[in-house]
Image 1 (tube, rainbow, N blue to C red):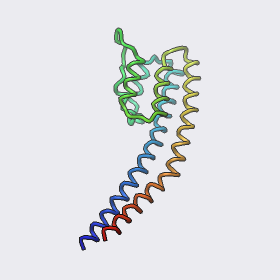
Image 2: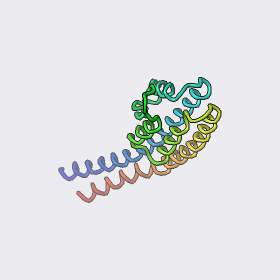
Image 3: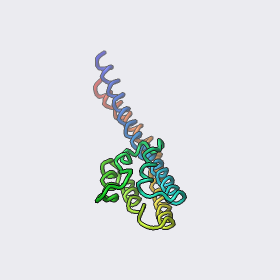
Image 4: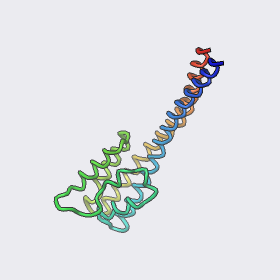
Length: 166
């Protein structure tokens, strides 16, 4: 009886590991969606409201859709003498563990906003949106291809370990 309970526990553990790995892929895909929202919101604030970088940061902090991007809470909302906004942005982005593709997009966004006129900033942000669309398509494809594989293999390895216990 104890062996059957142990085998069921191994099967459940293997399934949980597989589902956790698949969920990690789905979270990466959702993160791309949130970053896309950040880019669109920033483009609106810079291009149509003509906000400066500190007003943009204050507005982005208040946006509930961008809550998964916790680095936004570390950004300044007003100018402080001797402070470098780019350094604040870079440190804030690097404080949250992003994959290299998303981190590159966010670091490039921080280098764009507040640098030149609003039309140039909008063009650069739209180029970032195109890059992010490609990354998001790759993440979606990876999730569709590997997510089911992870769930199946995790459960199968758990069942295999359970059979070995019996």
